[in-house]
Image: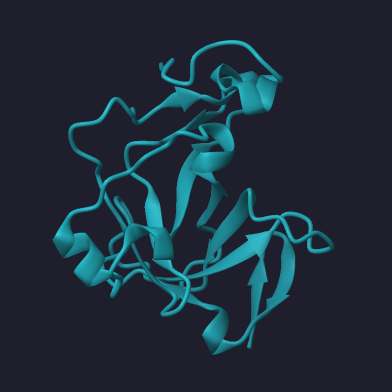
Length: 157
């Protein structure tokens, strides 16, 4: 199959899709997505584009939250694990949505509402982590992985 995007034509197979049965917050009707590496030559999933095949103008920039915050520790409920057909959260992959701004120093990442995907089933959900210090909007420049040192990862705004 092929899809025309703002980035050109993308070829994919049905098994490449990640399905979010309930959609994402603000996008409940868009349930089928492709995860695209920014650099196809490298086997690096620290940053991805997530493209809706139902509306190819909807694209999310995803970042691996563990890349930014090595001690990131999302806790899933038993119901969320069941929904993802997983016995343990270690079986799953986690991604945070980035908000990209024209001034890249103002880019933010949402650590409170990660996307969680079961790589075996290719099904995912978006959750709101409860009882945590993670925020909806952390500036990327607040993370040592981005700046090479510096401030505490809990800085937000």
